[in-house]
Image 1 (tube, helix red, strand yellow):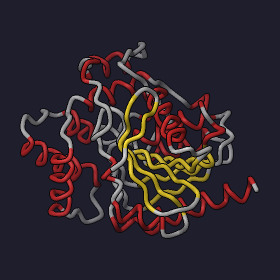
Image 2 (cartoon, one colour; image 1 turned 180 degrees about the vertical axis):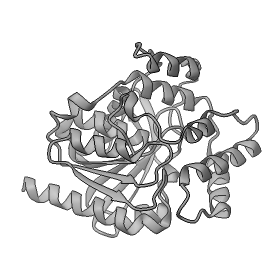
Image 3 (spheres, helix red, strand yellow; image 1 turned 90 degrees about the vertical axis):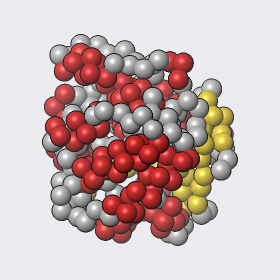
Image 4 (cartoon, helix red, strand yellow; image 1 turned 180 degrees about the horizontal axis):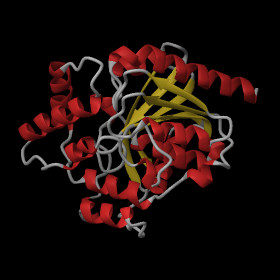
Amino acid sequence: MPRAKANGLELEYDSFGVGAPIVLIMGIGTQMIFWDAAFCEGLAARGFRVIRFDNRDIGLSTWLTSAGTPDIRGLIGRAALGLPVTAPYTLSDMAADVVGLLDALALERAHIVGMSMGGMIAQHLALEAPARVWSLTSIMSTPGGRRHWIGDPRALSTLLGGRPKTKEEAVTFLVQAMKVLHGPSLPFDEAEMRAHAAAAIARAWHPSGFPRHFAAILASGNRTARLAGLRVPTLVIHGAEDPLVPVSAGIATARAVPGATLHIVPKMGHSLPREVWPQVQDAIIEHARAAERAIR
């Protein structure tokens, strides 16, 4: 896979298809390959160039180990009290990485799609570099703020539980975490997830990136007031049964952005299982095409 020099870092990326670019931003501590290749190909088949990449500090992009490991529980305590949180980097820095990727690929602008933390990064990108964003799609994400932290506390506890010490433990941990995040209603294919997790851990195992990602979220605060000034065409997609980021967070995001469209997916949790691909893909494509028509 190719690498792009972006914002002083190197970002691993790949792409599918040709046409107007759609850039996919993945969530906390998660490699780009969790944007399933078949999902990307499904978008590309509709006439788009789909680009996925590893965020900083994960996968095969630049690791920032020298930045140290934040005390997540201590930072959560500060954030819960409304106190300032410092972090090695912020979501704005990660949004600037995406701008750097667009520059490296000679793309003036792109449709930006972010999932979970990736949705938060996408929101920052739309706020801070709106000329580079053709449309914004925020999936299972939040506008920030203490009101919209988590749904089921067990989901967050799963993510913050004992960290694995070996690659084998890492695979098991990832499968169990994804099972909890998946939600209760749609079938969970544990064998498929184990194969996917094993491929990810074999590709790159970098557990210290997770706490720095988490610190970036906490340090970046509440975007609600800023989103009221956003003029980028915005689609918000959220699972009705998301156990980690409650559906109220998706509703709040859509309410914060003038003219935003809200699409709630029944039975979907905090994941993108194959059962929901058709409606999620349709929503992304229809939104991107509407944004293009509005500009022409």
